[in-house]
Image (tube, rainbow over the protein chains, first blue to last red):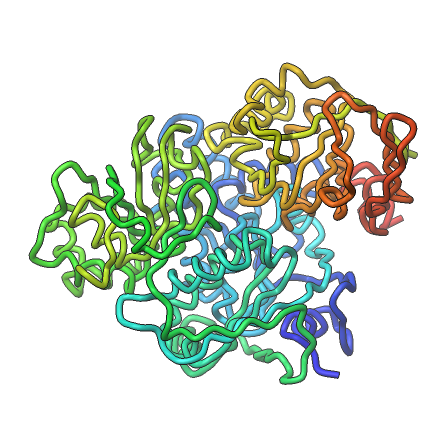
Length: 417
Length: 177
């Protein structure tokens, strides 16, 4: 009987011959990712009464959520995190400016095929783009992992999504994700491991694959994975120093559901307020006026995303009355985009450049909305009140849709830009 | 040993049209503007204040009350406050058709009872706010107003063990002994 990726990777990690969906296993994760919430986790950790973290090389800590600190409260929290890092001898610490934790984790060599990664953030599944098992956990649990070095996991059921053929021009991984979430709904993959496969996935860059695994959190997935290939190995070369064993699902594995899609028929998609599964083709919402456009975040702030935006905006200027915020996902992405002239093009077109980090996505700073305002964002959540006022609205789309929308001031089909 | 059967007053989370809320996300439960709060005692007051029609829930709720909602309760971010705010108010259990994956783990690990009731919207009964509900965590039996029994899912083994210990940390201590 064949096994899924999740069944195989968790068996390998738990030292068992095999596991089956539904089984509870205890594993020692390879990495524990935490961000600005490290200070709160550290406080919980201290209450447990253990002096030292179980394994300081397991911890990866990235300050990204509200960076630089917006006020004294955040500054004090960051200060507590830095003190904890120094006290515990944690070396994989990335202070403000390095980027978003889900981008920095792989860039700094902390994600590899067959790794088991847990993180105190719901978008931890992003690292599945490298063939890792990566799942989000809560703060209490992160503190427990710090103390014990172990975690209990229920081996998830799996869902396989096969994307045949190739995507049309100006239709991207983000559109695939939004289409799938519209199809499956916000709980369509609850507790499940989502495996992405097929010609269109193979054709995608590693960055685009990260968009898919990132967005899988919005269909309720516990983790999502893209099987490693030459592109994966080339991406992590020089970053990952330790030996690893890639894990591939068996051809005859048992799936809760298999979804087959023809990529060539897809059109750009937009998630409308106030849920990510309220999805429509861009043509149905075209013409809706926006006040702000955001290009960036852990979903779409990578070099390939910024390139697409620059291609549409180069030599032109955003519409009057529209604010365009651009925030690269990491310092590495910012430097690459600077070197290519992409940033210069975006700024010349009227963009406001923000530092690498989460920016306005979680509504704490750097572009919160006033009542009645509308933002089209390349981020992953459009929950009511997510980016400032409860009486503001958020639409989600691809970088191409965002750039086309910034040019006109109304939601625009990027195939026409 | 903690009680594995509880009785309490029910709040059914419905919208203005009377439809049971699905997909109540962590931003509706505990909005991101309060994320800097880490003290349990300060969390209760903001519970559900971004869920339309339920903004004043924290003032209406009493310790021992129960909550009922539809599918995918607690979807969205991994924020622990979305679980802890209910603990701060003394909410005895949350009953829903299904829960967000991370939310479920957070609640189990914090010792907040979650009852999955997959048949909720097809059982043909309209539960009302103010109903008295008795819930048995071991059998999954839900008794409405002392008369109408329903079958929800019992706690899983891990869930029950962690709940009986108090939370994940206490459970860890007992496991190591």
